[in-house]
Amino acid sequence: MKITKITCAGLRGATPEGGWSNEIQPDDCVHTLIAVHTDSNQIGIGSVFTNDRLVQASLDVLRPLYEGENALEPERVSEKLHQHMFWLGRGGSITHAISGIDIALWDLLGQATGQPVGRLLGGQYIDRIQPYASLLMQEPSKMKDSLAQVKQHGFRAFKIGWGPFGRHNAQMDESIVAAARDAIGPDCQLMVDAGGSDAYWHRSYKWAIQTARMLENYNVTWFEEALTPDSIDDFIKLREHSPVPISGGEVLTRRQAFLPWLSQRAFDIVQPDVTKVGGLSEERRIAWMAQDYGVEFVPHGWNTAVGLAADLQLASAIPNTRFVEYLTGSPFIDEIVENPWSIDDNGYLIIPKLPGLGLRLNLDAVEKYTGSLQWLAP
Image (cartoon, rainbow, N blue to C red; front, side, top):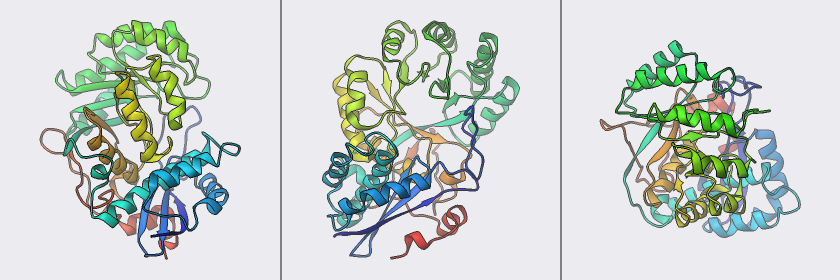
């Protein structure tokens, strides 16, 4: 099975707010779907956390390297693309685009073998996993109402992040967290994401350690992105002294970038994003490396239904993975699939056992948010 072409389509019209200082709008594109076409007319689907114009430009650069390649060798083909991009885009948009290609190649391999991707990634340790509902922070009363509504859908774990947190004062921060804990009750998991990768994040180690001590009072499961993404020395110190687990890593790409953070124990929990880091091939290596260093692996998943499907498959193949992220209220997760995601009575998602990613796209919704289905045509 040979690759004949790779196409992409950006998702627009319902892009959710990110809580960023330069806030994205519904018609902005930050998520792009990828289709790898083959000479057998089978198509693999991937997802990229990057604007579609950047993805298309990356595909143009990569085309001589992937055309005619074996579509059933995702790790080798993806590594070939990485190796030849040393001078042009290592770690940037090209790496993000390779992530989507790699996910689509694993989808194709699963289709060709009749197996779910998780089994091909090494075997499925679990058949279901707990999703945590990912919501933006709001002022306390609105935060409480939003969480109460989401809890009605069956979630038992919640992450609140960005928004006003860390951007006003300690009293505001604590009042938001207190409202969140009150809304979900004592038996649900609560995670807090400061959003330290936002532009011009100004909070330092001292703010982070003081905030971590406050979060301990609310039984917070982890404190995410408390510092700027390159502050490795401060992260090492914070992880050592924080009374709550420290997580991060969503902006890092490729396994090489993660090595110093893991080997120096900058995180208790590492959160690579499959749609940016280099795909399933790369994220699997990072997940196993994390286990070697005693760091918990939880995939970052602020993306699409395709990204969520990839996270579910990888989570099934990595022992002791407890959570996947579920971005609430996004049509790019909830609407573009034929069979909507369902949370069981215990707050868990069943990991699909269909071949490939186990995903069937709702083509009407895909056309609505991409503007065309031409990118899926042979």
